[in-house]
Length: 432
Ligand code: SPV
Ligand code: MG
Picture 1: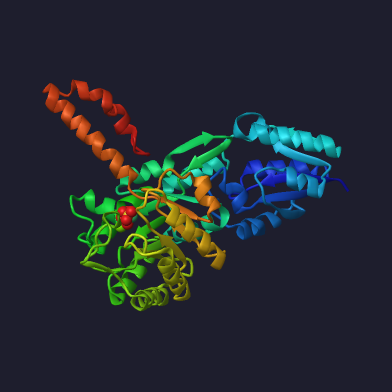
Picture 2: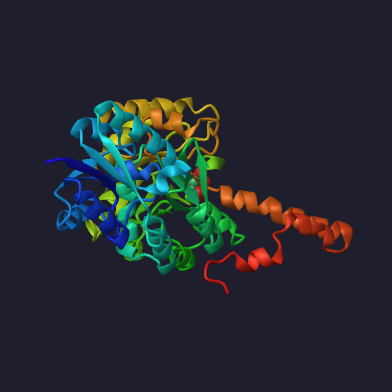
C-alpha cells in the first residue's frame, strides 16, 4: 500500500480539509502530519484547540489512517522520517510565505523518489478566515486564560506589549509584520500599573485601585482575544490578594505579577527609596502561597517579581529570593533592573537557568533595550514585556498635534500628523 502525506492544523474541519483527505485517500493510505503548537506558533496564531483535541478529531475522520505530529513548520523532517510515496497540498502554496515550503518539499520528494500532488485550493473557509471570525466573535475567559501557558510551551520567546485602552489593545491584537519569511506579532498584552495610572493623570503608587483597573480592562477584554498579564503591583496584603487572584481568573486574565515591595509603592524606574522597603522573604512567600491556594484554575500564573537589583542589592540577593519564591509556588520569575548595560540581569538569568530549566523567566527590558529578542532568548528568557511603549508613543503625538494647532491658530497644519477622519471611522472592526 502506498502512503500519502497530508500536513494540517485542523483547528476547524471544513470542506477543504475533507476534500484534500478524500483526494489523498485515492492514492494510498493517508498519513496526517498534524502540526504541533510550536510548529504553528512561529508563523501563525496558536490554534484554538490543543494538539490532543485536534488529534482526537482528525483520528475520527474516515480518510485519515494514521496521525503523527509534525513538529516543524517545514515538512522536510517528517518527509525524511516517514518517506511517503506522495505528499498532497492545495495549490495555494505557490505564492506567499508558503512558497519556500513548497520549494523544499519538491526538493526532498525528488531526492526520496516520491511525488508531489497539488490540487485546486478550496476557496472560502480556511484556518485564516476562521481565526478572523473567532476574533470578531470574541473568546471565552477560560480559553484566553489558558493561552499564555500554551504560548510559553510553544514559543522560544513570548512577546507581550502594554495596552492601556481598547484602542491600544486593538493594535496589539491585529498588527502583523512579515519579515524573514515569518509573521511577527505580539502574543499578548501587559496591563501596566504605570500606563493605567498615567493615562488617568495619576501617579504610579497604587492610587488606582484594582477594581477600577479591572473595570477599565474590560474595554480591552471586549475587543481582543490575546492573553493578558496583569501588573498586580505589590499584591496588597495576602487577605486582599486572594480576591484579586480570583477576580483576575474570572475575567480570563492569564497571570498576575506581584513585586516584593512593601509600604507606599513607587514605580521601580525611580528606584526604591526609604519609604519603599523590600518585603521580607517570609512575608512575600506567604503572599505567593495564599494566592496559589486561592486560585481556581490550574493554568493561572502567579509570577514573582524581584526588586533586588532596583533596590541596589546584588545578584546573590536576587537569587536567594528567586529560589525562595519558586519554592513558595511562584509559576514564574520576573527580574527587574534599571541599569542600562543589563549585565546584572544577564548574570541573574544565567544563574537562574542553572538552578531551574523549566520555570518561566520574564524580563521588562525598558532601560537595557539594546538587547535583541534573540539575545534575551539566548539567556533563557521566556517572556519579554514591552511595558509602556504604547502610552509613551501616544503622548508626544498628542502634544505635537495640540502644539501645531496653537501655533497656526487653525487645524489645517495638524492634518498631516493626524489620521484621516475616514480612516478613524473605519478603524474599529464591524463599523459600518
Ligand atoms: C509597569 O509597567 O507598571 C511596571 C513595569 O511595573 S515598570 O514600570 O518598569 O516598573
Ligand atoms: Mg507597575
